[in-house]
Length: 218
Image (cartoon, rainbow, N blue to C red):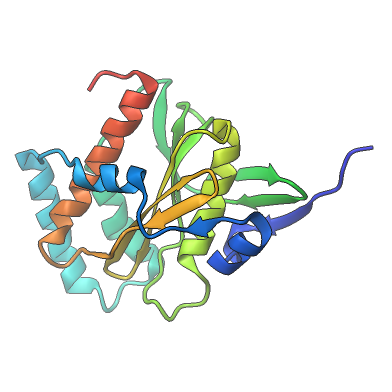
């Protein structure tokens, strides 16, 4: 007889629930996060230009864009400035279903963004981008929601590899890692000042990490 599981949506999860149900612990320092955020590549002139162009549009509209407008007009182009596509090996996906069974629970949802193996459809997810919100007072816990998607992705990585993540609150970006039952969250990075270049460097570093994991030449 097949064991019944309780379905839980990413969107209803919080960091407290992720601890209570799955014993995921927030650690202040994590080697994988430190390595990711400290070993940053330089940006080429095109990448710097794209960052400046879209930063200007963000600053002009930060107080009027809703979540979807923020995604289309700023977040998407910033991710798009780093080419994660490798035919039949790796790609960036949006709003694709993701699920994972952990014990007596099944976590389900559609992350706003996923970097995964595969080309036409995501196979094994390595990175989750989830739940951008206009301000910190919006309903929900963006870190907890993204963590749920990362845990679901972990199940497809044999529970061994580091899973990477990022969530956005207004102008601030936060980066995450999950390994085993420990996760860590970076400080906030502001998109309206010089830290925009750090954000793009971090995304570029993520591409380098994933290429190395998959044996893809840079």
